Length: 183
Image (cartoon, rainbow, N blue to C red; front, side, top):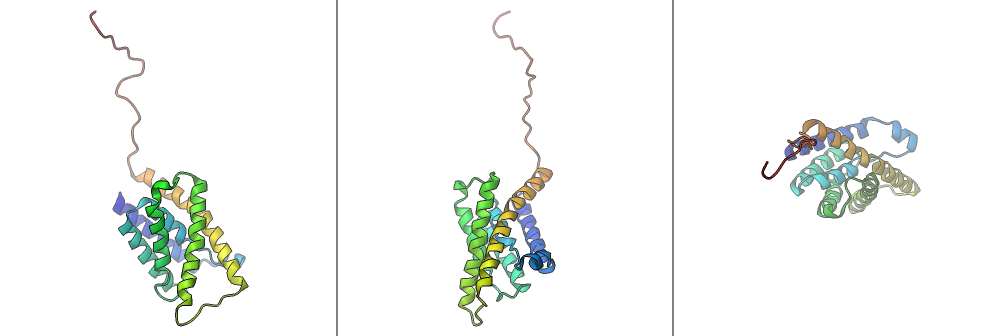
C-alpha cells in the first residue's frame, strides 16, 4: 500500500494547506496560524520511503508557499529536513506511543519555522521579526504537536479500513485432543 499511502498523505497535505488558507477561526482567536505540515512530515518520515518523503515535501511546500506570504519554495527544505531526519532515525522512534508522536510533532513544528525563518532572512525582502514572532512560533509549535497524534490515528483508521487484518485463529480447535502412539 506504499503508493496508496503516498497519495493519501498528499491528499491530506493539500487538505491541510487548504484549511490553513481558508479557515481563519484559530488565526483570529490565537493571533497566529497553526502549521499542520511538520506533523504530517513526521508521519510521512516514519511510514514512507525517502523518495516519497521528498515528493510530499516538495509538493506540500510549494503549495503552502503559493498560498502564503512566504517566498516561493522557502518551505520545501525545512519540510524535507523534518521528514529526512525522522526517516533515518525511525528505528529509534516509538511510533505507536501517542506521547512520542506528540514530542516528535513538537520538535518538528518548532524546527520547521525556525529553518524557514533562517532561509527567509537570506532573501531579498527580510521578514518582520518582533516579540509577536515568539508568540506565533509558540502557537505553531504547540498546535502542530497536538495535530501529530491525530495524523497517526487517522491514517491508522484508514489502514485498518483498506487492508486485510491478520487472522489470529488456528485451523485446529482448542478443545481438540490429539492421541499419539498406538491405540
